[in-house]
Image (tube, rainbow, N blue to C red; front, top):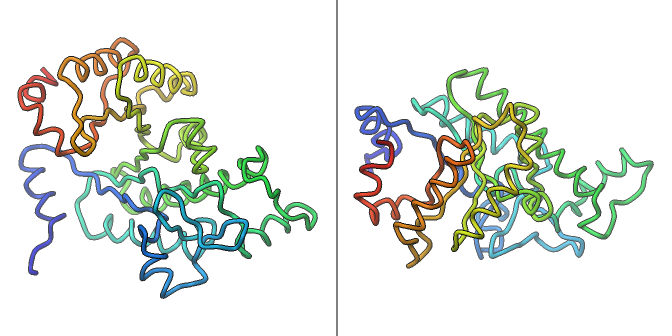
Length: 274
């Protein structure tokens, strides 16, 4: 009570010339193991649906219908509230914004939208059908473009960044087509989650992701490096290897997931930028 954690963070960080980006972690997920929680309880028509008509659920998360204009406007209003109210340097969508599990899209609104563009035909029952994947991914790309334009219209210097899963898995599983986001200029930085537990895996993922990157966008690419997950932390030598591999490939920076892990490597981070 009586405190504003984000405002405090911004004030303290800016004193130290550290920039603050507000991170919208849940994105289009309504709840985690709560049957949609208060959002779907209040707005049942906002629920995303799988092919059986059930509330869309994946890895414990229940989802709002990310294709519905009313839901999109709700998400944009949350982001714009932060942009309007706070002196943030950026806003970021996670692997749940924009995103929707590819098992979704079978709600009434989305089916009718699809039929209106496909001679009255129903969408494919195979949720991995390539054209159906792309059609839905494009709807999320359009949403990101709308969000990007609204943020920039209000505060042109606020960065709009995204931290999707790795391509093409992200598109196949969550309809996140980040190469297209970059290509259309709808994200200022992309930070794919290269969370790997051995150097061979990290290097292979990095090279794979770079293969989807156009030269013009390389300065917008900051791979996500795993420094903590539950009780796991990489060795200092493994962490150093990952960062060195980024530099070898012409990448000037990375995103470390997540903050608690920073405290496990005090001497490394003291010298990280020197």
